[in-house]
Amino acid sequence: MCEFISAVKKGRRLYFLTGEQVFDSPRGDALREWCRSADDYTSHGAIRWFYGLEERDGTNVEYTDFLSPKNFPAVIVRAIKGGAMRGRGIATNLLAQTAWAACDRVVQTARAECDRVVQPAWAEYDRVVQTAFWDLFVKPENRAVAWTL
Image 1 (cartoon, rainbow, N blue to C red):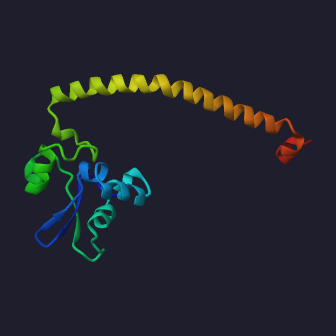
Image 2 (spheres, rainbow, N blue to C red; image 1 turned 90 degrees about the horizontal axis):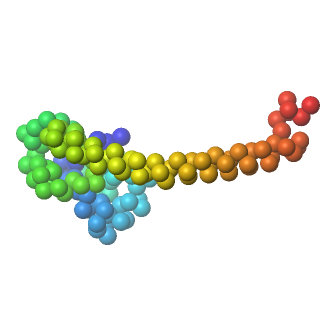
Image 3 (cartoon, rainbow, N blue to C red; image 1 turned 90 degrees about the vertical axis):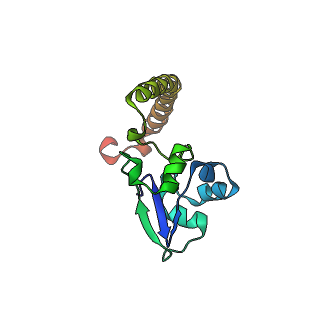
């Protein structure tokens, strides 16, 4: 699997995808249909598809060391600082500790709200599965051989 941030380098040009390209453009709509899963949105294949690059065009590169902007080409630094990577990934080294604390409070609130929906949904799922299983099992023709005796 490709990492956040993946790119294709071809000559002096660097091709990568921003959140706006993936989520807020007609080409991005088509890209999301083309991808097999959301994990593919960061892939070199998605980048190549989006820009119409062949496999032989350029070199796959990944920029994953977020300790310093010096580890990235200037065009990617501008995209990160401008918020253009929204929706593409999260890198822990981008936020100060105080900001992480604020983020964690938001995450905990969202998780609690999600749990209020997810827990009843899992309970309903379990009820449906249990009902289907036992409705089938009580009929001898549906039982495993060892249980037909």
